[in-house]
Image (cartoon, rainbow, N blue to C red; front, side):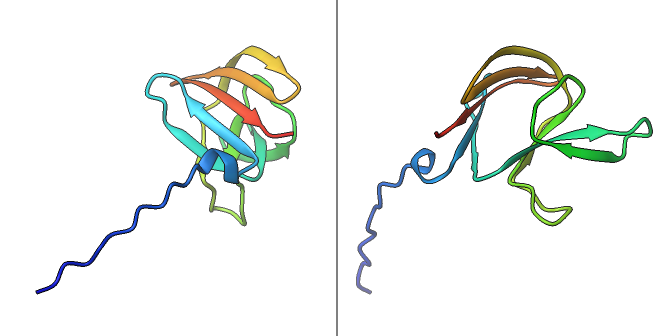
Length: 102
């Protein structure tokens, strides 16, 4: 039986996508080309998708035709820092940093 040579490809996902979302406590990286901020109705159902973050909204990374997406956070409880292409925010469960390539 002959060995098959495995070729390693150096691929940096952060360079391929427009958005990088990093969860602070474990460094988990999620990448995508679009983000949206979901506003929830009183009954917990989807109400509206926004382009801007706000307390009480959830970030959704790469929203596709529902219900598909790359990542969604729990609701934002605090916006810790915000600049033109960067936001650091706390949710019910975690702290995230979102970087946008200009």
